[in-house]
Length: 269
Image (cartoon, rainbow, N blue to C red; front, side, top):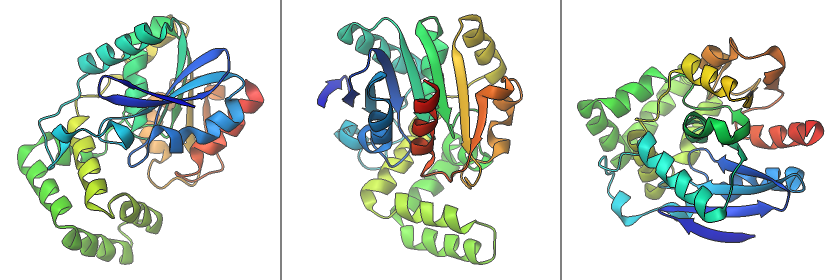
């Protein structure tokens, strides 16, 4: 495994296959931990570039410290980052995969580089629709201030979440996930920065799908049957326009889904 930096992003080079896959992880993860199962199952088929996205893994920068909402990642910035990466690595054609938060980056790559992409794998992806809570917390300054306060004062946040979980307003698996991704100051900072800084990565899904379809991109959409973080309603906008055999519901929760997809793809690729 070789590691390199591209602008502010670190990536892990996994596998040794003839095809190229750019892979983007979920919140609170890094490229290596998220896509290790892809390397194990698909390493003969793909050479995988698993990125540490902004504010995660080895791509954390000092400029992001102290719950900043000034570091906005736009589609233009993302396109330039990927363009430079492709030029440096001399990559002409490639596939993309995005899990959870990384779905936004896979969608943005597909939007900008559809003429160079063969396959796209969206795994419980953010970006197909937007949860009202995310819209509120990220797009409006007063709500961002409240969100920032909650991340700096987690005891109040966790007590409230615990009450919601006990009365059934929050599923227990979602509560456990929240505890896991917010249990240190560094993780809370990463979540805050990610929610706020990635808010410009949103998409007109029907238009985007027509664009990638016209360029021959083979798009797969995966969700987990037992996933409490992203349910079927969250991807309905895309699922309704996909061919039936490209929308797959696997026997999985959220955290195991990437591994399940890796095994599935090993069998079909």
